[in-house]
Image (cartoon, rainbow, N blue to C red; front, side, top):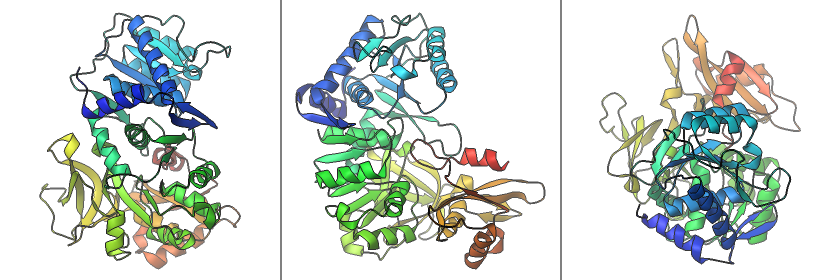
Length: 495
């Protein structure tokens, strides 16, 4: 299989950068040679197991340095990966291994439980472990005992394209696998650079799980530019800020929880003194929080929007747009990024909607082809081409004929001084069809809000049909590995 331009570039970086520092993980720098050697060890075991080059590989991914080596190596060599989140129970991991039926499974040594081994054996999958063996001694990459050879299958084919199956965030239920060509991650280089030619940072900080689009975007962009990367296995606000301060980063990537964590931790302004812009877009961020962050730190926030189906960001603010428009488009997520086109369409007819009229957002991404991809997100576009999001159409709550957009209610709840974050969902009602319910994450150090206070707040800002029927006051909202709120878990709690 011939290499795509992105794969060729990653191959050149991985095989030709030698002793240069690549990834710092838990205080130690790993070189490109280390990553190259780890991937070559994986490839040797795949060959020894009789796994064809065109066979799909299942990968139980963790945010660790050897896992980064597997991803970069697979992208560089044309091996297809189908991702499995490690942050779930052993029985669920085993269930996914069985369902995928891959010729080989690659997983961290700690994820090779008896259940995982049994599932791989039943599927005829070879097993490769990364990380030291259980005794703590031996090679960093090794064949799992009893799974040294691939069975007869049938195994899942990779197909003609060089692809990767990326996991959705799993906010509303079980994560879904979305198949993307690896070449699509060339779009992530543009996304991370905010549509500009190059990025000023010599170092990037990665904290998103490698199984989803955010983690793969950050890793691919860093590897493509042969940048040094600081890898956090799990987001920690103080480790994140320490890396920003140590390397004097000029731009930082952030998700809504990251922005809120920085504000709540009262990180001193001087710790972020080098930062010229903060950018993000993995979820909606209310204008009030953006204003508070910008006033506290003097750092412009360039928010955007993307999705796994779009291979990353499609709409964003850029430094050039911020210089031209300032805060004149408050609440907007920006304009279409270089290499993309966006439009708002009528959800019933599919025809492009007039300016400032709400509909579903669609995007056309050059690296994915000429077709338009429709999202379930509701948006409007103004006369200057700026996009404004209004929530997810498939999450809209119909209460006795009245439509409620959950994010609109959640944004009001976040105005309460004792509320750190909020989520709103609809649950069945025998009379009205659906009613909204809300869960709020209380702000540490303050008395928790009362349901009466929250109800009054909503009545002061929205029509009465938006008032949730019930409130849950939580220490922490349940979150996915990428720090998005798990709406499915909230639904179980309320129902």
